[in-house]
Length: 53
Image (cartoon, rainbow, N blue to C red; front, side, top):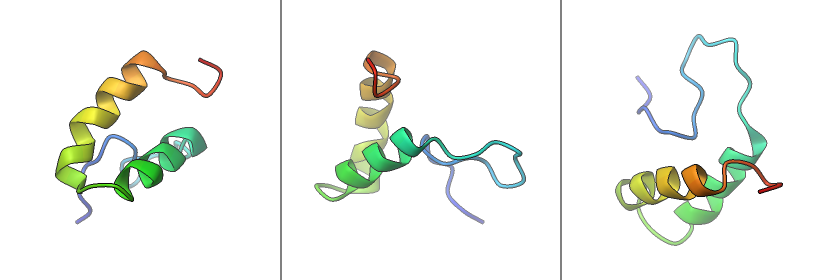
């Protein structure tokens, strides 16, 4: 079973992954661990939810 992460679409969902959220998570994960990124990712996307923001 895959870990639940804020940038992933839940298994079995009809949703498509958001390219912005996937890209952002990949950039953040290059610098640190998943555990450290989770909280920062949520705070970052709350402030800047889309590329246009």
